Image (tube, rainbow, N blue to C red):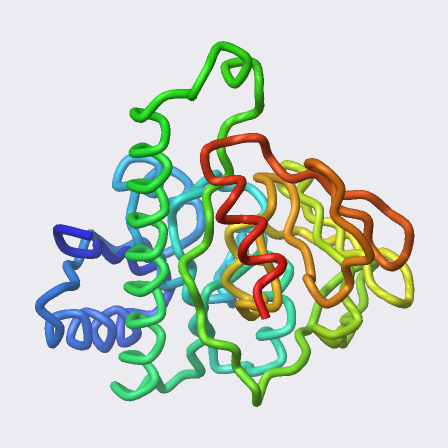
Length: 267
């Protein structure tokens, strides 16, 4: 990753802007991209500025920060919620918010949040570089040209032993889902389906976000639409994976297929 990470502040209180601008100025790899004092201003400014980070207050007049997230289209922006009310952290999960800062914002928590964004942007950059290299290498033969594009393999992430579960919002409820109970995750444009021992949950999230939240090497992305729990695999036959629940998941036919198989079967 090259260049600085741009930051847009959306908050109806001037003191919040001053604090965040001061904190942004303390880090050489961050740059201040502007301020909005309500969600209506932000609706116009976000597509124009295209910030990497949006510091977003929840409680604002006319439209709340959550209302803004329902409307605005900013797929490449990382949202860091800022509010004095910790109960809004749960609502943030619905919108795939990257981090949550409770006011008053201290430098230690600010640094942790923006460092997380920096890592995610770096991982995304590396994944795009890898995908571009695969694309430029070209298919091995004519038949491969008809196959689906190669999946973007995630960077290796350390298994976080202290985090053995995650919270998933679905049907206006929060579900505690243990990683060991997940069979696989299926991507559906702006949503994902999580197949686990108690059924299926449909939640608003991206596959990139799920790849970040699910621990490696337990979970392997076999296809741009699937992330598989390798401990829940019954059988692999050709380019099809049969899970312990009987459902089948594809492995993308691409130059990276052997690497995916290695990740699925390595001890």
